[in-house]
Amino acid sequence: MPVTDWKVIYSAYPWFVELPATAAIGLHKDSGADAFQVKSLSENRFVRRLGSIEPSQTDLIAEAIALCVGTP
Image (cartoon, rainbow, N blue to C red; front, side, top):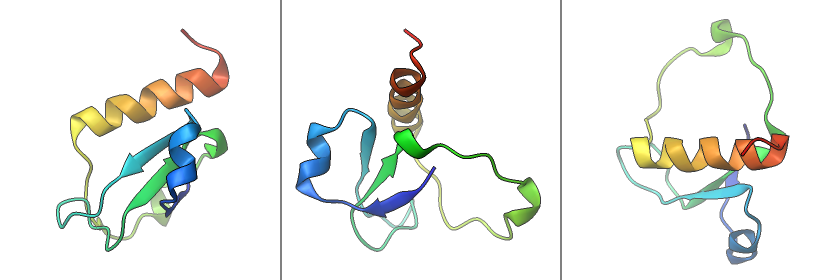
């Protein structure tokens, strides 16, 4: 899913998950994952790992995707 610059207005949208900038995540500025725009990608497009998110953030993203596709 796309990750974009975080804007305060995104907190009003339940399909956006805030990803604060940290060295572990690999982001230089606060960002948001937009679960409304999930896309499939080939694993071949992934050249190198830039960072990783915490399991709690993965759970929030999974919940946001479920909301978008109508799964409880």
